[in-house]
Length: 305
Image 1 (cartoon, helix red, strand yellow):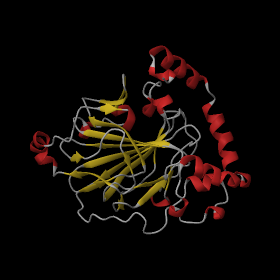
Image 2: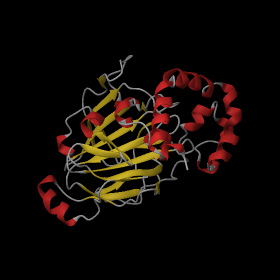
Image 3: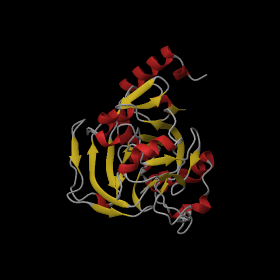
Image 4: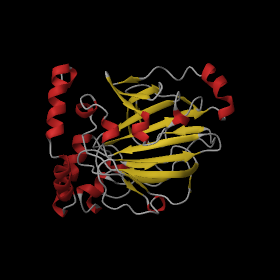
């Protein structure tokens, strides 16, 4: 049984990860993964994580570095959107459903026995999401790392939150209290015709930070102190469901947050999902929220791996 399954073990892991020089390790790993020599490791990495090289946009020999292979695009047309109904919610990333459920007051579940604050995650009161639902998707190092819009709408606000870089795998998620509110992250608010969805992309050890497409960064961010919030947009930007928004450069986590009665999720804990795969359906406008909540059994109490 992993050490983090025990209370004493979790304490030891938390102390070790806190003492780890995370920023220095990430910078050093970044230099190595961006070196031309690292491209020699691509076939070994692909075998270790079971990556299908036929799905890649290019032949693996055309990637200059292992870092560029991490953030690879898929072959055009491979992940077409079969659903034309704009009420369908799609997964923004490939990964495993690590947590999902209802937001109780200001609280989301990170792992068994560990919770975190919605307000701290969003750096905002988040009142429009209280009583709603959330889903957390964990990306392993071998997953496809591009981030896509889960729905069509307008990104009305995007902020970068400076933070630390704890690992977001089970070692980190099961040991570090408030992990997602402490790590570096980018928060985007996507406004639909009926309600708003928050998309939170969380950085991690080795990942460093989230890279957004140029259209989403009209205000350039400089060096920030931990906890500092910087606006990335000076005006709303329209996005289409499935559109590429950015990418990670290693494994990481994406959290989707929805308002009360806004969506009916169709995912199970531990389920593997793929970017642009339907994972739920928007159920109506806010004025019908109460009725939707009474009729939607798809919002179980929070659960985690």
